[in-house]
Length: 230
Length: 254
Image 1 (cartoon, one colour):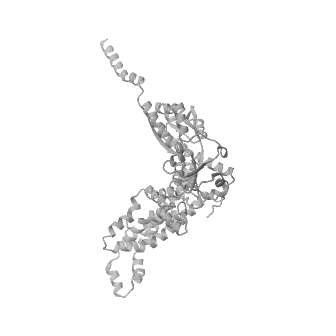
Image 2 (spheres, chains in turn yellow, red):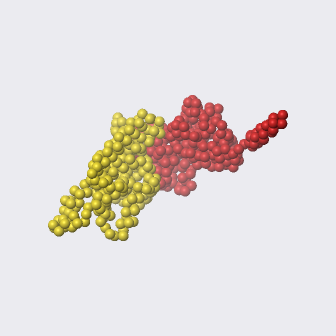
Image 3 (cartoon, helix red, strand yellow):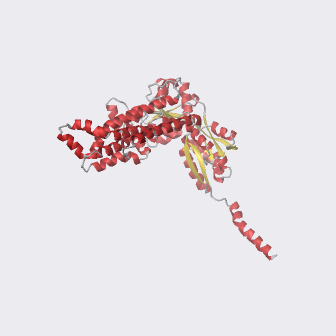
């Protein structure tokens, strides 16, 4: 997307941010549901190391993720070689590269609420559905999803909010390109460093209100159910 | 009478360490804010100065614009080695720095560089009309070398065309790291950083003619926070010496 020079910087950044958070959330829900289901239900010993890997982004400094992504996405890096071979070019400094980074970085914030929601579904409910000859897919759609709906909403909101709040990884692999990789948090950092406190105040207040509103919705939705903790 | 003599002795005894301190200066520590392009050079020079003087110099590197913002927000830096002449001048005008210590310590140059040894064969043709996928530069909003890169591209009338292909580093250090990691195929970088990068990987490069942008004159100044810091004052004096000047040219400055 070529930036229109008349568009204010914050609109371009807000659009990139919303697009990034929305797509990240959609991808993470699609990937996260089977993964969370497996983690919640399996008795395999693998669930311990895989659970730890899923949780890694919660404790890793963003610079670690950023550094490995930068190396990995470079033309001779493993991901870079793959994407170049597939004719996709390199992902460094592109929106797609940021999307990959965000999916990795927000993974636990989607998987953990889902996992907690799935784990809370009593096994006998599923057994009952099975005895009624519901297919596995049918059981998932008509039993699991309705029961786990609050966790699904929580997972989506947390994944979205956490992606909007991402900063360090984007700073390292984004390259600050307007309309492509310059998200709101990076724009705010730029404005602060340029001593443009007027714009910085507007951006910071906007992000604060947005995050508060999201969490308010989450608290309100979870007022009767116990919120799964990440 | 005796009490008075006793008192005088006490005062003398108490003053003795102070007198001794005045004669042999106590080692001091100075925090110096350094533009990223000069960070490696400053570290080497600070180590040499430390051996000679016994003082300690701590280096904090960032883009000049960011260092300026930090200084204006009360960052405890004793001196600034800027990547331009305008920022130290501005700090003097704003009463944040000592104008008597203001001096130019280096003149920088830009190099078009790639870590691919075959990428820059005819650098001039490449910059004038070649196909450029992505070009890493420092953010012109904070970094004087980013400004120089913008001026060079404007001089070639390619700024508008290449703007969407620019990858902006927070400072020249990050821009250089984008190129050395291979994430960006090309960069317009300070010669000092390219010399450093070439130690591990020769790559290919071409020196941008000095006339394509305003001269990158880099000034140093003592900041208000460092006005009583002997280490900061001494380091600025040391930078003006013939030996330091020679060393600075060796780090890639004109």
